[in-house]
Image 1 (cartoon, rainbow, N blue to C red):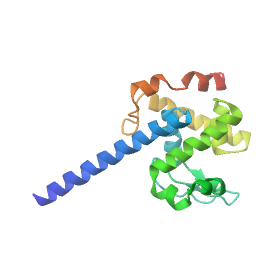
Image 2 (image 1 turned 90 degrees about the horizontal axis):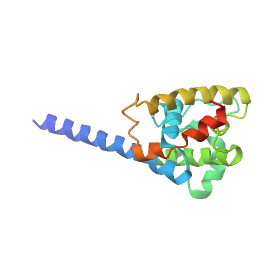
Image 3 (image 1 turned 180 degrees about the vertical axis):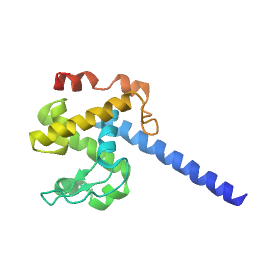
Length: 171
């Protein structure tokens, strides 16, 4: 009996954590003017929704956490007390930071797929490859294929920047 009660408590805690993480996408998207499903697509691609550190990139930088925040951003982020450790230990902070980074790219390139490519790479070839991966995941999320993480409310979906993103690719 005690074991089953503990298992129920663990399962309940996991469900609450998953709901909290989902709301992080909605809040971060709203704060920075980014479609929450797009943020989820990026997190899915970057880490499969895990707090991990990726192996070093060719330039020696490292990508951190759910959103794959590149260590090149750490000097700027340190102004707000954001560290590598915090990005790894706080998934919501990581998602919010990813939304901010994407917003920086959107300021430079508009609400286009070029901004999504900018999030990941400087090279046009790498940007195009990344955009293709994100586009596929974003489409799957819109169809509800990852129901475990795609619980964005209908209101948020209705206010998404779908039209702007498509316009940016000619698609």
